[in-house]
Length: 364
Ligand code: KQY
Image (tube, rainbow, N blue to C red; front, side, top):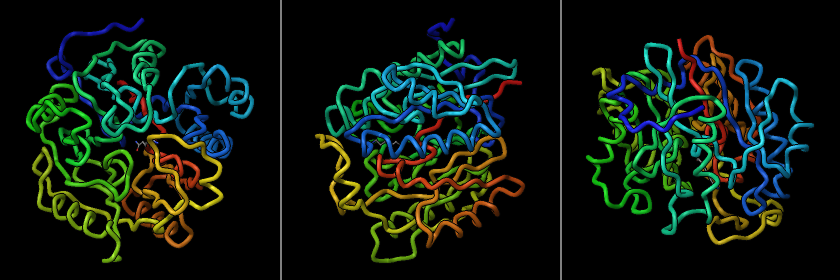
């Protein structure tokens, strides 16, 4: 049973933990949408399986799958992975699953944001999105966790928290006219504070170049732990990413976090630049919302990794930069196991490993 609560999470004593804290489970959704994934999802499914199996060695995984694809997914995933039938509009669990909050009494609740497919009728990527919008409440039902319905449009990939009162986001996304045009920056901050027990919001101006999510923060940075982040970097002054990363670095290093700490930044160079090939573009059905032309720049980033119980699941995207990315992360996460998964097929859909996963935090 899952109850819809009318109170405010922070007032109830609940906070959102950081991704570096202990997790009970990871949720993923199975890709099959043929106007986003090439070859009707067949190529991406292989990568989603690799990601799921790499996670399942350390954290239980649940895969949400449509009725049509249930047999296919069940037979291709190992017995370690729980497969549940759940309808979605696509496969971006980071954005459609609840953001979980916990208290010190060992309780866990879901925060269910309004979802509008990254921009609704203004610049959203598909219509309709009602099945995606129901996913957070369905997960709370399956997990038997009570739920708050938050009063703003927000995707999980547009925020990062450190679990100690700091939230990182971008102005490009949260202040975009396609999300909450009637709310001021201060009003949005207040909703975040009320729902996640945040004390300070660090606003980075822009997300990664040409990111179709309107600049999700999870494609630009990743929180390592309180006071430390990984930032997507670019050395080429002629690349539009150069100025974006420089500006983000300035913001991060001029700020202190909620606890007054200076923020340590680990720079990780972006792959590529990477572009959709002719062959890849041909495998994708055309649609109104998503640009999938040959030659389109892909928003490739190594910051889009998942932290799960002392393991990092890192997207491998470019032989020229993969080893460097791994080395930066190994230094940022001493004692963690860094597992690389070739992830171009996820990138072709518009995101990466962080975007397709959502953690359910452990409770004491
Ligand atoms: O970045 C994410 N969190 C999701 C990417 C969605 C892309 C939809 N095609």
